[in-house]
Length: 113
Length: 109
Image 1 (tube, rainbow over the protein chains, first blue to last red):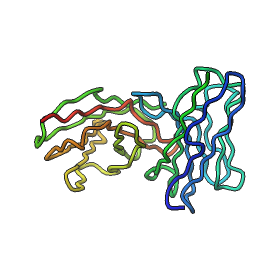
Image 2 (image 1 turned 135 degrees about the vertical axis):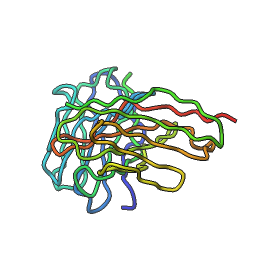
Image 3 (image 1 turned 90 degrees about the horizontal axis):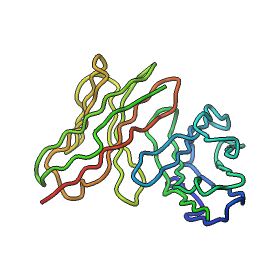
Image 4 (image 1 turned 90 degrees about the vertical axis):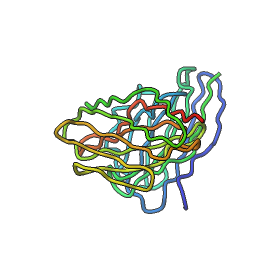
């Protein structure tokens, strides 16, 4: 596509539910990043992929968070048993290759009630 | 790991010049990027320095000194629309792109 697409744009869920956030990167981009951003803060790194391989998941807060990119294109970030502290903007970005400039999607605003 | 330091807030007058500094500590460093983010929007790429010196793109310039682990973003002829948050990002070969905490620039009339 023309840009990075994320869905849903907004997600409201109840504590304890699982959520899946989707990211469709720019066609042909090798690298895909997931960030979390709290209001007034910088994007916080979660994980990233080159093609389908997860290169680094050191930023995932705990084992309730996981991500995959099975065919090297679309990626899903899954949060199991959501907690209120998971509420944030989740941003996906892609780049032509590792450490090149990032193109961000509009994000998914997650609210856990 | 990586750490980046930049001022949390800067205020400048419309039409003036403002400089936003960034110091970094990272192993395997190879370049410094800058991103702009308006309230409610997504971060967008502004500039990248792989080598020491100044890179100019219109009203924006970015500088890097590897020996000092220091860089800055220079914004000239400030406009109200430049009010936004600005992030420096240190890239390295072994670690992902990590953002600084950001500098909130307020441009006043």
